[in-house]
Image: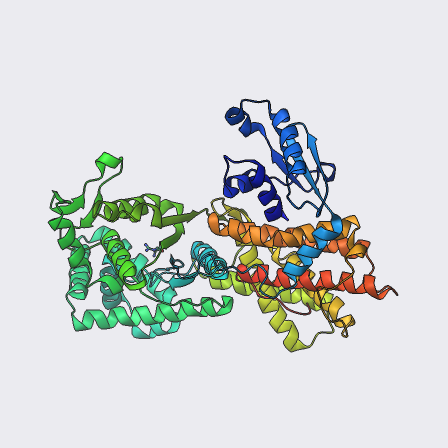
Length: 569
Ligand code: ARG
């Protein structure tokens, strides 16, 4: 409908492109103002006329042009707006025709283009905490969104698996650790050793020297050093994968920092040959003063590479290997400067594309204000524990609400809804905002929550189960869908494409999460106001068709967030 209106306007306004007109068009807040409105304020300058006069002229021109406006009830001027009133049944018909298709929402705008997403990326020998949970779910959702738009997405886990901290860990393990303890407690024990190292090093400076020596051994391929490092790596990855499995998350590449250890020398050489490296107290840096940034450290004074060096090597590798159109980095805001420096260095190396195609996607903190969350020691909170607790809490609720489900069905629903509740809570708020975590809200079946959307999905499924001879078809009697609740539902259904593009343009999964809640709410209103089991076949079929379409869009929306659905809960 909107496209048709754009065409009509484009026909009578010659100094605006279809894209510009598209940007101007609004959906009026009140039904009295029509279905679409075109504001004329910003045309006044170009046309040297009052906006209201422009609006009047446009309507005249449209009416006297040969444009097909048979799908419109009327076109009206109100103030500086041209308001378009779409014929209700025409409107309903186009929406049903588009949305009944299983591929509704998909597009091919990204065909032939690659997007790299660097996300999750926890640190080996450290726990997978709630912050990593955020990058994991945001990255995974962006992967789903871009895939839906036809892009090929490379999912990259840039593990923090290299650096001086491993020298420290080896020293601590050799002095105060044991094989049994590491085997038994995994990351927890590695974290204990790491803290212990710092406590002891406060008294004994030499320990730092020893740690540097061990990292140096790692960098120069010492067998013993690499064997211990690899062991810690395997243990950590096993724990990380437990979290990923629980959430149904996969990666195409586990290429962490260690992957680039033999690729940093070339970076240093390139920087050197292009005259970008400067000495600074024995270290090598790229001076970024001109760009109001602190210098980017490339080599420490002991000659070892660092986080930024490996990130520069990673950009070059990815560009060569995947020829990405864009490379996205999902990390906390505190890494803003780091990425600004890395991107600037890439630009200075002569890569013009670096400016627009390397994109840092920051996010806010998770605030656990007053929440009691299980912690395994100290104040360390493991993502895995949160997910498991959510599953338990949802299990209790399901037990109460739906005691007749089989034990197996309850387990399955608790896992999907429990994990989904945490993911949804994380994605519902704007990415950049801090997320507050409250068990009562997260696991609630009402309000703006994952369980609420999943519950609405299960309700749609249950309705359709009751009418098992119903066959979805676009040839329904549109005339019976003209009540307000049905029209509102159709409007919501019609927004799905826009929602996905907006989420992609802004790298903002919350757009989809909010839409899922809106759609669920509007459906529930529709369902309260319209009985489905009526004697008139045409009415029943039309309402079932809306239920069928809503159910699939709810499922697809949740899927775009990385959340599953269950038929009963
Ligand atoms: N390991 C880092 C952390 O936990 C995140 C890595 C992000 N990706 C990158 N290419 N630097 O903070």
